Image (tube, rainbow, N blue to C red; front, side):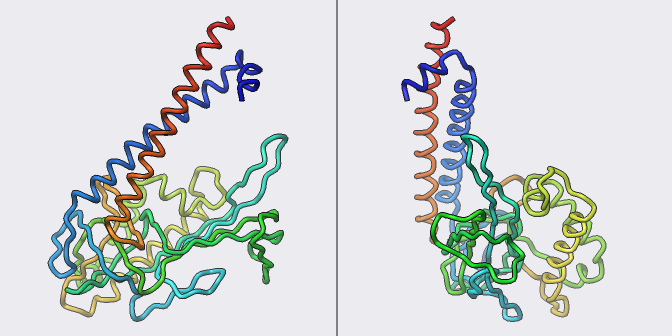
Length: 301
């Protein structure tokens, strides 16, 4: 390591990389610590008595009675899934994986506790699933029968994450009440409101729908955005025949986090504290090495 440092002591690139790592470590420490404290400080509500606004609920998760969901690759029954396909990119001295396809289920999730149940719309949520699997293959996505291998060889890496019916579920998000009859009679307005909400979070919008990775939503990709919005509104308004308002939890529109986890609040808070410490260690190590390299750089000039 020292030989590498001596060899590059007149090159500013290591300094720039270390500076970025230090900043990312500080940001990660602050973000994880803030979320851990938010989880610890937010009182756990009950489904029947939860108030409007940011709420924390714990219970057991299920799929809606009229919907069944299975994972794309393993065919496992689930309430939520995400898959990602990466392709190995080989450059001189820089072998890495590039994401070429990623999708996340948008179906509602039912959280049930001893007092009742509430519907969750998981769009835009940060999810800690109960199951994560990795496979490798030389066959690209779309192949009729993909031969998977657990060995770390192959041009493509497949990752599948999911949560199962009956798993515990923790949710921190915005509890909203929708008036079904008004919603049913105002589909264009509901569509416009939902698309406006999605547009506010450009990063999440690009992550979900920017298939070609060019940093923009093309006309074809925008049609997928509208189709997803239509699917959510349709699922929500399935209760329009009921005279009772429909309560559901979704992503807050004020910048607060939207968290789903197949674990309890204490475990999730502990995980966030662990991430904050790891980020702090990264920041401290990168800062120390940055100062050492900076000293040698100045001495070399």
